[in-house]
Image (tube, rainbow, N blue to C red; front, side):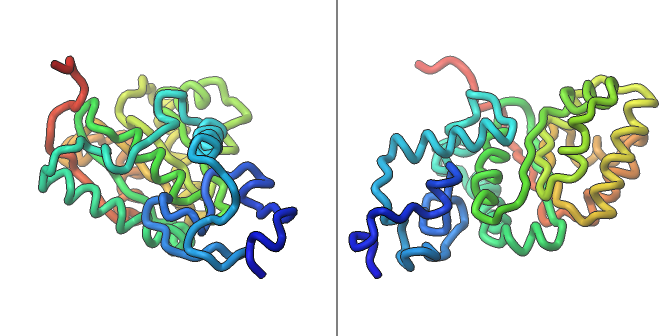
Length: 241
């Protein structure tokens, strides 16, 4: 049955206001066919503006702030044909392309780089890549997570149990022994449940190795890390001519 013959049908992508489906080849690394219409692209009459609104709405619900709700794969890590940047994009595409298997295996990644290199946008694209799987996805800025730990906020359960946790800017938090203990306990719970965690950080691999208070968590990240991606270039922000 072709789409034109059943215009009254609305697939779950539209009905549930999801940002992507298996027919949208814009989703990073995703190549499956639309399960409802068996086409390579979603045949429903969704305009680019409506599609972007759905994607932005989804990212907002996951936890991303407005600035990061319109990520651009082509502009990730800069638009120049930099071999180092392209190598980093390739590793992310590899992770996205096997997202279902990675989530089933509890695998994540660590993305290390200085400020302004596109790490948060990479997490937003990761959320979009995982959207079609039906996994529960949560994004949080590391200092915000530590604020929740400080107040023993009931929302911590969302981040403890999410199928995919996107933890941004690890190392930027203000910590105390009590905070560190709570954080390590949360990460231990995720590790024991084989849940995927993707981490961005300004810390280098060497600095992570020296972060003794977090040794337990970092050791578990190493075990469940599909890739350690190091962005070896400076901030892409700055004044434009």
